[in-house]
View 1 (cartoon, rainbow, N blue to C red):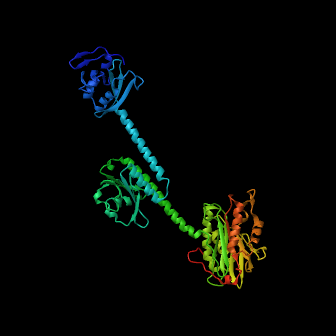
View 2: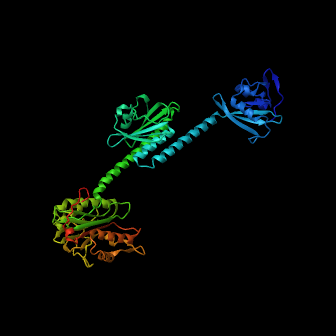
View 3: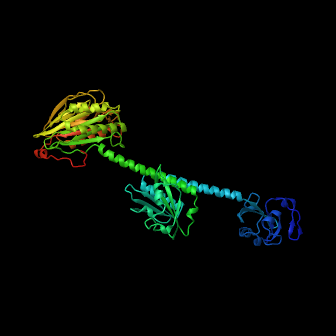
Length: 555
């Protein structure tokens, strides 16, 4: 700024040079002792008492007086590019920046710039940045879990961190009780489940049932029952605000915000931000609850689809093993079932099958076939009739897949076991004798679910004590692995492995076959693999032990 012209005094007013007089912003010159020596009209309008001869500290706000004290007698160099230093403060409701420039005679020239609009914009930007950070943290934490309890705890913790002194999340459980998670800024999170009357909390019933209008509702803390009040909140509860948590087409729960006497009023929180948080939390809770329901339904369905645990039945040893094509899958296209006869000496119905295809579609058809065979088990003595009825059911269905099967009816006869086996498009069973010789059952037949009719031949197999009949799917023989990783396990290796199992019994035989094929495959890809072993016990005492399956064990 150029040097001002000499000053002419008219009472307490000053006549300034053109540069100062025309400046739209306030300008004052203060001598080393802190006395105002000059001012322009803009400064006079802003500080009416800042006349020449007045002390600056007596006529300006405290922040500007403190700034003058900090300067002392500045040299003509400072913080700014022009040698000035900058301070900021309020004058009334306006925000100003005060730029101080030192002069050669030790005086200070103050130039004040109104930055109210800029300050408001900066404050708005900071608020938006805080809002954005809040939304990001909320989204990141709420969307990382599909567990209902964890979503409740996260919602309560985030609400206590950003919106109130404490927060409670209330949801209705499947049994109709209330689950409550409460968190405070300085207290640990608490969980409780209670059978309480919703009518005891004004607005809670509406929030949990989604009655319109779904808007935050203020409650009188004195009317809130003890089971809902946060127990570790410091200070008296002054404000209680209940906020519905909307889910996907239905309410997911309710959020209660608590505030004590010493904190900011929760009701002054940005309602848009509050609604956004409630929407995110409600969506996360609804997704977690839906996932939990699906997991429960899937588990119930899977119990009937999982391969059963096999036992000794009517004097015959049975053992089974199954390995899905993918570690993440529990069921697939291969299956086996055993349906015991009504008593000692009665035939036991055994079935092992392989549905063409993989994944969910194959698993669905597997379930349908198993249910159908379960219904047909009473006619187990007639393999041909069972295959005809099953084939008719599959051909008339919307499925385009087919299946191969091995049916068997097994009964104890003295110290021996008589088995009639029928292959329908499937690999024939293998029999290992006591001397290690491996034989193939003479049975073959048509695929099931392809042609209008199906025919098959039945073979009769007699097992001496210690001998085993093995039913298996082609997942074993076609499993690729070995030294080069691409060679099939093959029927010859299976026969050699089975020969080494002579006299081992059903369980040991299945375990041995599974270990060998698993080692052969390693970490490579493979199809579903299923195997069932039927063994005639070696000892008379073991043969006499007819152990029936216990209830709920899958048979």
